[in-house]
Length: 478
Figure (cartoon, rainbow, N blue to C red):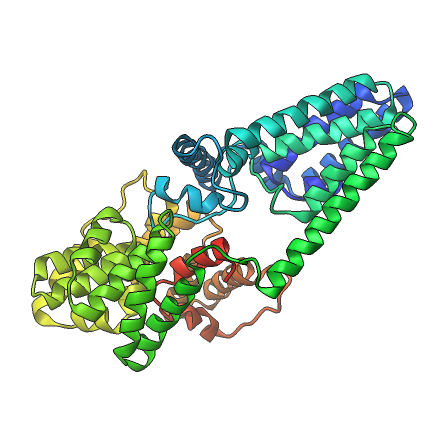
């Protein structure tokens, strides 16, 4: 077990392992068993440290790399957004499974930031989803567990259970996955049973517990059958309209039939009204309304409220070009391309870049904001991509190498560096970059390919709304 946890190189898992070990050292007896546990942990840590010294040093440093700093900052931002969502509905919360939807209004709409639906800690998840009532219920459960552990503290099973529960709680305070992982929930249930001696709970209490289990099982089966038969809705109100709206927009972009826009406008408006906490349906409805009527007011307003959403900025640029507001269109489009550099491969953007009257101005606007020395690795990687796209290869290589020096796990810089190395006939460097790129994108144990064409396979431009669709899939299951 110690070896498996150590090989995760997760800071939260290592902290939980340390707390579990301390609990076992304090609670279990005799001394011989304590020594066995201590030796097992020491051997596991030494083996992992000897096999992976760099990874071990990185994990122990906690915040030395930029990825660790970004992870810590994301957790702090998540806790802040959770506090805002809790303050808006402090009593009843937003309901189980609605964490990401609840904090949506309190989280910046940034296309360049990684999206995660996992709460930063268990308290944030409870406060947002179940409110003060849920916090009170879980607080009573925690007091009951602590009282039981203290009452039977001399039992070895109780000591082991207490140590593991303490470690699990520490892990859940670094990133909460208790309610989204059936395995973790099963472990918690088994631990709660382990700390209670069977001899103490017998007779009538056993019968009551059995009746309670039968009632919960029957209620679960009845609810499942009701959902399956359609008597109870499986998804939130508005989900069906959201499905239809996305499908209608997709069909319109595929065949150009404006009848699909009529459908999208109506059903997305209905979805936005039924999902007031989710800003994505309102954004998609604003885009559909502009495509259908030519009125860009709602779309430009959405872009102004979410200045770092590349989809909205791109569509706002199209709307401004249609309205002959070239200056505003270039500003929106340059911002969208800086957030999503692969938009330079879009046919509309590529045609503008080739236009004499607009191309040079747009290119200068895109490259006007070069990242400074304190910029993140992601910002440098995106800017290096743009430099590479515009043929400024020496500057692109320097910027991309700065990015991977800070965060070697970025895949696209390795692909671009491999292409540049191959262009100057440096086969050794090209092969090294290609292998690094394939390990990051495919995994260390996947089949390796020496084909240079693999490096260009990612140039396909993702469709608009692809990020929004991924977020909606995590929230509503489609």
